[in-house]
Image (cartoon, rainbow, N blue to C red; front, side, top):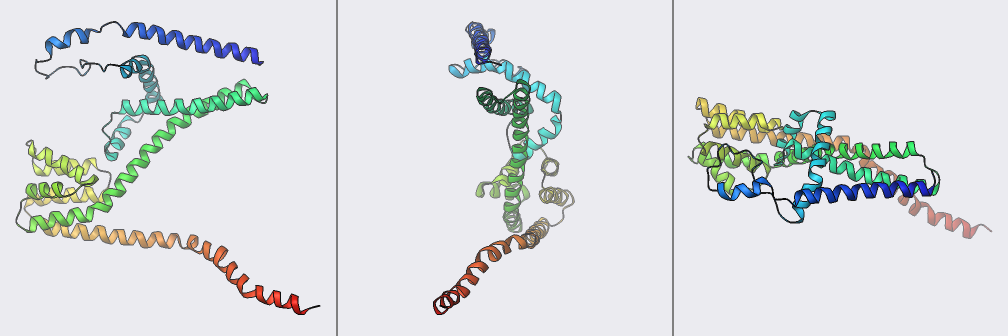
Length: 313
C-alpha cells in the first residue's frame, strides 16, 4: 500500500472521529431531564430512587464521559461477553479491597486494551512506512496488542489480590495477639474489636472494621464473622473468623483460641521462610561461584604468573 493510500485512510479515520465527537458534543449540550427535574425533588427521600438519577458531573469531565462513556461501556459489555466470569471477578475485587464494580473493571480493561492497541498500531505504522509491513500482519498485531492490554489488567488485579493477602498475613499475628490481650483483660468481643480497630491500621484492620460496622448496625457477632470467613481468600483469616464465631456462639474461651491461632500463623510463616530459603539455595550460590570464587583464584595465581614471567627469559 502506497503512502498516498495510507494518508487517505488516516485522513478518513480522523475526519470520521472528529464528526462523531462534534455530533456527540452537540447532543450533550442539550439540558438533560435529570438536570431539569432533580432540583425540585432533591429533598425527597432517597429510598427506591434508581442510581441513574444523580446529578451528572460538570465541566470537561462531563464532556469526556458523555463522548467516550457509551463506547467504553459497550466495549466493556463485549469484553464481559467474551471473557465471562463475573462472579470470580467480583470475588477478586472484594479480596483486593477495591471499591469497584465488575463493569468498572471491564471499562479499565478496555482502556488498557486501547493503550496496547495504540502502541501496536504505532509500531505497525512505522513498519509500513519503512516498507516491510503488510496489512494483515498489522491488523493481527493490533488485535494482539488489544488482547494483551485486556489480559494485563486482569493479571494486575490478581497481583493486587496477592499483595493484599500477603499484607494481611503479615498483620494477622499482631492483630490476633491484640484481640486476645483485650479479651483476656475482661472486654467483650465487640469492645475488643473496637479497641483493636482504633489502634491499628492495615488491610486486616479494614476488614475487621467492616465486621464491626455490621455488628453495630444490628447484625449478630457470629454471622458477621461468618461473612468475613466467606469473603476472605486467606485460609488463616477464614479459620480465625470461624473460630471467633464458634467461640461466641458456644461460649468457649476466646483468648485461648486467638493465642493458638496467632502461634499457628507464626509457625507457618517460619516454616514458609525456611522452605523459601531451601528453594533459593542454588540461586544463593550463583554469586559465590561466578563472582567470589573467580576473584579469589585470580588473586591467588596472578602473583605467581607475574613472577614466572619475570624469571623466565
